[in-house]
Image 1 (cartoon, rainbow, N blue to C red):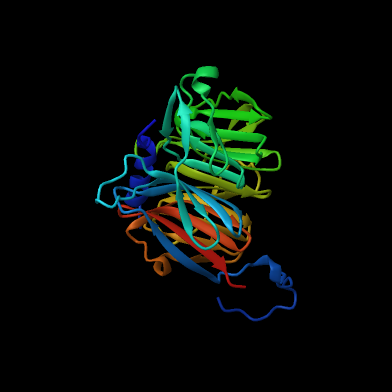
Image 2 (image 1 turned 120 degrees about the horizontal axis):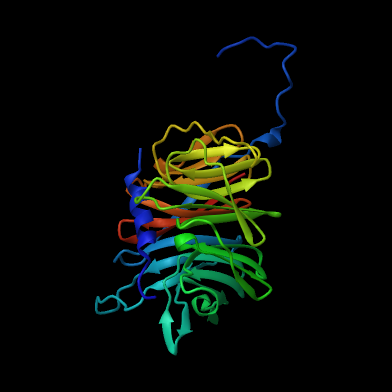
Length: 352
């Protein structure tokens, strides 16, 4: 429980490795689309470097509102003598202005430990779900770990979480691990895969997840979770591993070595979006089909506004870094990751 899982660090390595008509107006042409078919690319960014080195990194981010967000990861600080603390800060709180380092400590078999965290889903300052091999729930100062390895299955190992509300949650992770918690009732869900489940996202009654082992194999799966059952969707013609999934009804996206889209989950083929980049994408999140971000290796951050893509890679100046996860809520976007040996948090605000 005291070291960052190997596949989390591996994903960072893979992210970094994968970087690189004129016509006359015709009166019978359809009218131009309404203005609200596009959104603004006018975002400004503030970058914060957290920690003093030693491999500090942030792995996940959750936005509650404009003045409250939480990031999970490992941020190391030196003490007054220049020595590293035994345990990193594993949770970082954003108050709309600055980032505050915190340590989530739990009781585990009679010992108080600082848990390596990889996932976070916050609904308020007192309703926060964390994924640190096992699920953790609590507030800024009081936490409870659920030892599902004892109660459900000894092989459960979770790293990401998503839910409709704090009482209806899903957790996914290593070797196909999927568990649900509905009103305090935990259940292991058979995923049908031994691949690591990298991401999970839902909207209304549709819940999707992607599974792969980047750097180890090209195998990948797209999973649809319906209650406590899982089915596999088509992956045609996707060749490379997948790392993230996001959608709104009518626009479904998965990303990895490319961005793939379909308009219906029953479609047999995914269409690859034409993007002039060779970056490995680690995450996709947004507000709507015409207002979402994709991020990944070499500090690449792209915004789609319904008509065009805008890259902020040069603006951020993180060509030697990697963005692990992003969260978007209205006119606020937060991306987290790593640059060198420091954790990075990027706060983006739309200007109009």
